[in-house]
Length: 104
Image 1: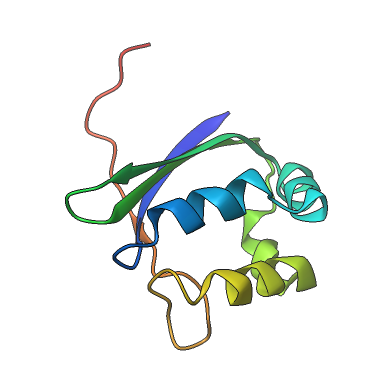
Image 2 (image 1 turned 90 degrees about the vertical axis):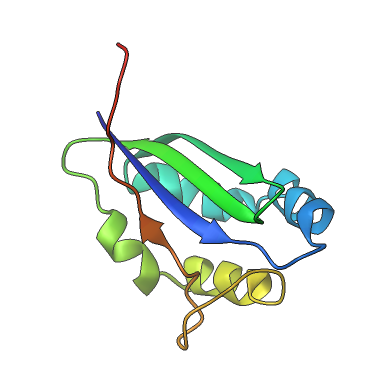
């Protein structure tokens, strides 16, 4: 398993709504993520900056690069666009993070 992390930005005042939507994550989206090889996916919020920190594990041979082509992924991003920063095509603004330490 490979671990990756990235940062996204939540709009101010949207913490509770973001958490609510993720508590009600669509089963078909959760399955699409698992089918793409995503496991152990967590998102944390820095409340001082509204930065979301996401970390996940992905299996060898994962197909995460195909997720943006899935209808369920596009619908989810459209659903989330009103509460977080997005690119012009509706994808979340996501900045990859570089691992600088790991304690196994």
